[in-house]
Image 1: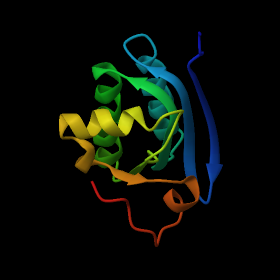
Image 2 (image 1 turned 90 degrees about the horizontal axis):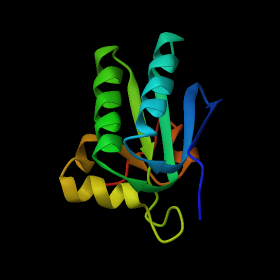
Image 3 (image 1 turned 90 degrees about the vertical axis):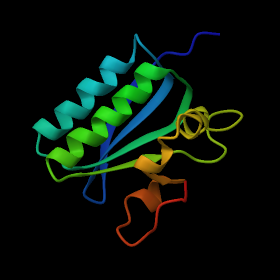
Length: 126
Protein backbone atom coordinates (compact mmCIF):
# COMPACT_ATOMS: atom_id res chain seq x y z
CA UNK A 1 0.00 0.00 0.00
CA UNK A 2 1.42 3.36 -1.08
CA UNK A 3 -0.04 6.45 0.52
CA UNK A 4 1.02 9.74 -0.99
CA UNK A 5 2.33 12.47 1.26
CA UNK A 6 0.16 15.55 1.03
CA UNK A 7 0.03 18.98 2.63
CA UNK A 8 -3.08 21.03 2.01
CA UNK A 9 -3.59 24.54 3.26
CA UNK A 10 -6.51 26.59 4.38
CA UNK A 11 -7.67 29.09 6.93
CA UNK A 12 -10.00 28.85 9.86
CA UNK A 13 -10.79 31.45 12.47
CA UNK A 14 -7.77 33.61 11.62
CA UNK A 15 -5.42 30.62 11.76
CA UNK A 16 -3.50 29.21 8.81
CA UNK A 17 -4.13 25.46 8.79
CA UNK A 18 -1.86 22.91 7.14
CA UNK A 19 -3.36 19.44 6.97
CA UNK A 20 -0.67 16.80 6.58
CA UNK A 21 -1.22 13.19 5.57
CA UNK A 22 1.01 10.21 4.82
CA UNK A 23 4.57 9.62 6.02
CA UNK A 24 6.58 12.49 7.49
CA UNK A 25 10.15 11.37 6.89
CA UNK A 26 13.50 12.31 5.33
CA UNK A 27 12.00 12.53 1.85
CA UNK A 28 8.79 14.40 2.69
CA UNK A 29 9.74 16.62 5.63
CA UNK A 30 11.30 19.34 3.40
CA UNK A 31 7.86 19.83 1.81
CA UNK A 32 6.29 20.57 5.19
CA UNK A 33 9.22 22.78 6.19
CA UNK A 34 8.75 24.84 3.02
CA UNK A 35 4.99 25.17 3.52
CA UNK A 36 5.54 26.46 7.07
CA UNK A 37 8.13 28.96 5.81
CA UNK A 38 5.74 30.04 3.04
CA UNK A 39 2.97 30.67 5.56
CA UNK A 40 5.27 32.84 7.69
CA UNK A 41 6.52 34.70 4.60
CA UNK A 42 2.88 35.47 3.77
CA UNK A 43 2.53 37.07 7.20
CA UNK A 44 0.70 34.18 8.84
CA UNK A 45 1.86 33.99 12.45
CA UNK A 46 -0.89 31.76 13.81
CA UNK A 47 -0.45 28.26 12.44
CA UNK A 48 -2.13 24.92 13.07
CA UNK A 49 -0.50 21.72 11.82
CA UNK A 50 -3.11 18.99 11.58
CA UNK A 51 -1.08 15.79 11.87
CA UNK A 52 -4.02 13.48 12.56
CA UNK A 53 -3.54 11.68 9.23
CA UNK A 54 0.23 11.22 9.54
CA UNK A 55 0.79 7.52 10.12
CA UNK A 56 4.61 7.55 10.30
CA UNK A 57 7.08 10.15 11.56
CA UNK A 58 10.86 9.75 11.79
CA UNK A 59 13.53 12.02 13.27
CA UNK A 60 13.45 14.26 10.18
CA UNK A 61 9.76 14.89 10.75
CA UNK A 62 10.33 15.62 14.44
CA UNK A 63 13.10 18.01 13.40
CA UNK A 64 10.71 19.91 11.14
CA UNK A 65 8.16 20.21 13.93
CA UNK A 66 10.78 21.56 16.35
CA UNK A 67 12.15 23.94 13.69
CA UNK A 68 8.60 25.13 12.98
CA UNK A 69 8.09 25.83 16.66
CA UNK A 70 11.34 27.78 16.77
CA UNK A 71 10.39 29.77 13.65
CA UNK A 72 6.96 30.66 14.99
CA UNK A 73 8.41 31.75 18.33
CA UNK A 74 11.04 33.89 16.58
CA UNK A 75 8.30 35.91 14.85
CA UNK A 76 6.18 36.02 18.02
CA UNK A 77 3.74 33.66 16.39
CA UNK A 78 1.72 30.70 17.62
CA UNK A 79 1.93 27.06 16.60
CA UNK A 80 -0.61 24.42 17.52
CA UNK A 81 -0.62 20.74 16.61
CA UNK A 82 -3.57 18.44 16.16
CA UNK A 83 -2.61 15.00 17.48
CA UNK A 84 -5.72 13.09 18.52
CA UNK A 85 -5.31 10.18 20.88
CA UNK A 86 -6.80 7.97 18.16
CA UNK A 87 -5.61 9.56 14.93
CA UNK A 88 -4.80 7.92 11.63
CA UNK A 89 -5.88 4.27 11.71
CA UNK A 90 -4.67 2.86 15.07
CA UNK A 91 -3.71 6.02 16.90
CA UNK A 92 -1.51 9.05 16.49
CA UNK A 93 1.96 7.80 15.63
CA UNK A 94 3.31 11.35 15.89
CA UNK A 95 1.93 11.69 19.40
CA UNK A 96 3.69 8.48 20.47
CA UNK A 97 6.99 9.50 18.83
CA UNK A 98 6.99 12.97 20.40
CA UNK A 99 6.17 11.45 23.79
CA UNK A 100 8.91 8.83 23.51
CA UNK A 101 11.47 11.50 22.65
CA UNK A 102 10.35 13.72 25.53
CA UNK A 103 9.52 16.69 23.29
CA UNK A 104 5.71 16.45 23.30
CA UNK A 105 5.56 18.99 26.13
CA UNK A 106 7.12 21.63 23.85
CA UNK A 107 3.96 21.85 21.76
CA UNK A 108 0.41 23.06 22.30
CA UNK A 109 -1.50 19.95 21.27
CA UNK A 110 -5.22 19.71 20.57
CA UNK A 111 -7.43 16.79 19.68
CA UNK A 112 -9.55 18.56 17.08
CA UNK A 113 -9.27 21.48 14.67
CA UNK A 114 -12.24 23.27 16.25
CA UNK A 115 -10.43 23.34 19.61
CA UNK A 116 -7.09 24.37 18.09
CA UNK A 117 -8.46 27.49 16.40
CA UNK A 118 -10.50 28.60 19.42
CA UNK A 119 -8.53 31.03 21.58
CA UNK A 120 -10.14 30.11 24.89
CA UNK A 121 -9.46 26.36 24.82
CA UNK A 122 -6.66 24.74 26.75
CA UNK A 123 -4.23 22.33 25.06
CA UNK A 124 -4.21 18.66 25.98
CA UNK A 125 -1.80 17.75 28.74
CA UNK A 126 1.48 16.13 27.79
